[in-house]
Image (cartoon, rainbow, N blue to C red; front, side, top):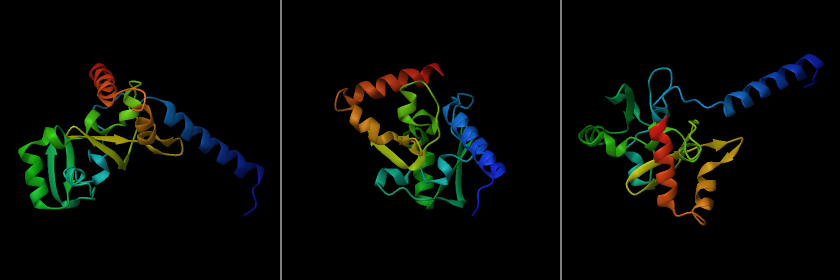
Length: 157
């Protein structure tokens, strides 16, 4: 493929737009949802607790606080419905690392960590792996302190 000046300029403009979108806080939404109000990009929230995150099915759903969740089994859906607060990811499904700064950043639904019975999701992409950064940070700051700081920031959004 030959890059012309116009093609190169378009590529730079797209890259610039992507960078701007990545650094602008997305504080407008309490829960990280797609345009159809789907949470966790369609992953089954209960499946994280068996250490096997799995995509849910459009045929097996539940709604909680205007968010739709997909499940890979009716059993998981019933488990969720009985205690949704246990299975809803921390910080409305936004990145836990970004919450340390009080920002809402999208996540990679397969980049997660269950801490004290709560699912924490993290960004993983072009700008790095924030779960890895979180794990490095707990070498100098106890994890409960990180969670407490993120919780405080979440409560102020």
